[in-house]
Image 1: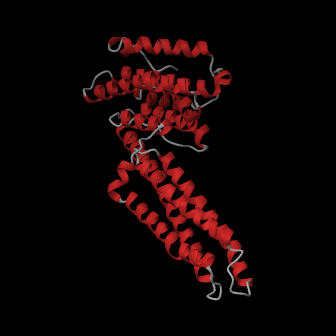
Image 2: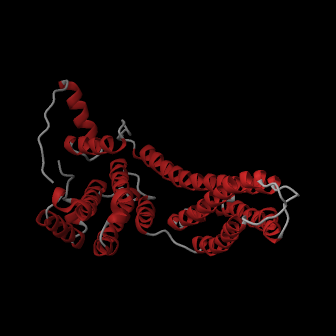
Image 3: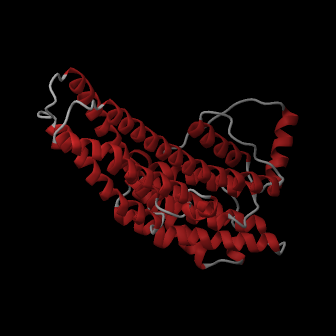
Length: 345
């Protein structure tokens, strides 16, 4: 990526205080402003404060991670409950609108579908939703593939729309019918029967979600959060947060071979450096050097993900390979060599 020079003025004392604060966090001013600019660009707001109190930063980021996961599940729970409610209301509207004067096998089948069969299947879906999102399952659901749950919700939404179309067509037709014959209502009966079959096809999807594991971007995010769970260095956590945002936006659009490289090589190296940083924090070791290696590993992952989705516009193969080779050398020389590396300004 092309580099540009940014110049601006600030009070001399403010600059000295800023440099001192960055030094305490193991950052250069350039690195600090780059992290800040990346967050502002992505979130369109003043997003966070980099502090010399790593425990506070770590607690804040971990809490936000838990809230993000809970929020994603809550949105899906609300959508599922809303869809079940819409389906129940549509079925009730159709069933109560059927006049007793219209008889025949077709209308009896419509009564049975709306009053019993489809209502029972909707009730079963609502019951399954209640069990799915019960408190004891909350933690386990965060490790499931939400894409499968979205597939289930999309199927339920299609059923809701199909039933609403039947309601719009059937109720006016019944009101305008003057004789007791149910002839002409066969398309509505067929649509309701098809909706019942679609309900049956959705049950295995929900079962597949319950036995799924997070995949793609969500799996990578889960690995990042697990690896960072014991880390307390605030600016490393901020860099990981930036990486997580890029992964969620672009990871699933990468080529398969790029995803394999990320998960088998680069992400594994980052996990190792984060474990070493955590150990250094616990043992009062070389936190600065280990943190610098973590930042280098994060930088490589940022480049790989960006290179995979925006190749010629952002990164050249030559600069990427040079950075990868540097990381591989550093990973092979962990210890004194890692301690000599400083965050790049």
